[in-house]
Image 1 (cartoon, rainbow, N blue to C red):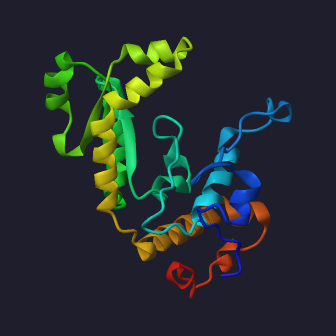
Image 2: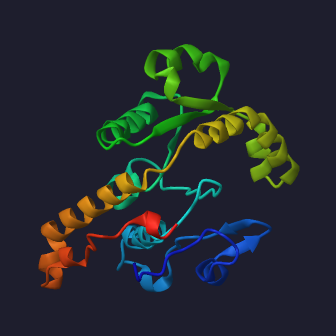
Length: 226
């Protein structure tokens, strides 16, 4: 209860200190490699920062907290795997890409998480392949294979605006899906406690030579703070 929690708005002291801000949008970056990191640190160390931020984030129904996560199933190695109300995989119409999505789905279903996907680089000729390999109920939309991406990366900023328009339907579908979701804070806390206990028993306690499971406040409840 005495932790420093974060409100995802412009008045929060953490946001003011560490985020780039414009209008009602704040951008936080986990960080890239510095010279001192070379050969010495793993990127998971930087993801631990993101874990701490998310588990102290008191976002409400009207707030949007969006993470551009590392590709693949990397989140499974941290408590980030249950930090999101909705996981959206960007899946290309290939067996390899679909398999990564399906690998995550196994754990998503096991923990009662909501996981869906959008198809990237979609062309009409891919339709039959997608129908045969993906459950249509899990697809939020299809982003077209577009020349505007190459134009944008060649320096044409207007091409990006054109690409956004091409993707409007998918963006609207994502927004509608998110609006259906209500955060179950008790379920979220239960997962958080289980992961902390698991890590404590696996290596925290041994590494720090103390029982870190005692850090858990049994009467803590997110609703008390929101």
